[in-house]
Image 1 (cartoon, rainbow, N blue to C red):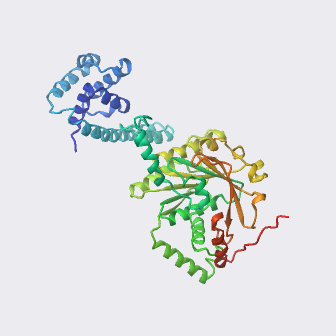
Image 2: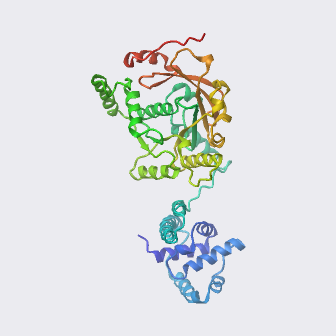
Image 3: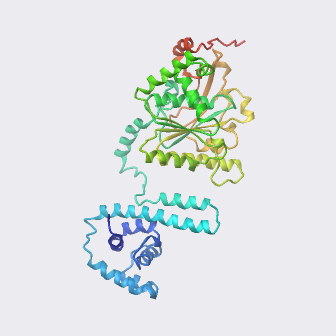
Length: 446
């Protein structure tokens, strides 16, 4: 472990010599991060000079700018600085790494100390959360984005390899619209009238993804963990959900199916229940960090559903609050490098329309959801496409992931097992009726 005095000497010495390093430190450190007497004032003078004059100050300027009480300490520090055996050019990478570690350590310790004052002064507890979140975000290694021309080759390589990071829905036709699947740093929204399959659709995607080895988290603000798990039991086993727990023979079959599945190379499938209307996006962040601390890497997050979340700072304006929640969810996807899928309701006017007529204008509470989302899919009925009674149709309403918008297609549903099938899986849906004993009757379109 590096001695703090020596590290602070290296930091100041390099700041005095390297303006790029000085700008990095000045933009992220605070005066009270430094332990050695006088160093905080030296740092403050360097930072002030960079801000006002865009240049590094000379040693004498710093000495003559600090208050009289600190002058002797500052002079002593500079004398010691001349005697340390440290070569900036040879050790720059080491110093950058150690400075970054020191920054993070001091930032969180300072935030904790300030939090005590907030509690003692009876200030809003939200200020503590903001302090801690800000401290956790401290980092010297700021991403400056893409240099279009210089990064041309790297960008093409990243895009071509990026397809490996897509998380397919494993509904073949839908994945064609998605150009292969959901990408990290994206927010996708399922819009539908009440009781029209939003949670069911998420449950079916989650089970397919986990079955194909993806690690999935489903946050629920509406159904209990056991209720969602029962849906998974039924979907995986293709058994009647109403008989699994009362019919011993069917329950035994379900248990065998799940045990067999577990022995395969399946992913993790976490269900986490939160109180309706009480959970915030930050609660999700804490949960995901806990998984990361336990070395569990997550591929995708489902949130059931966005309108049941609470904004961090409630304004009382539903448009503003829900839009902020959508933005926070999308920011969460960037932080953890995962796609996030949630759902929202279609408003009363939209519920009366045929699916072909629905667009993002009919999302309830806030158009800000659609403005923030990368992909929007609507569930509903398209009378022109009905063949069977047990169908649900979908329309792509917005699509930054694959480009195709306005496409209308269908899922077949087994109403007993709750399993959904892509249009391309029609024969599988027909065959699986032998297991669930569900109807496959055609719809009377007259």
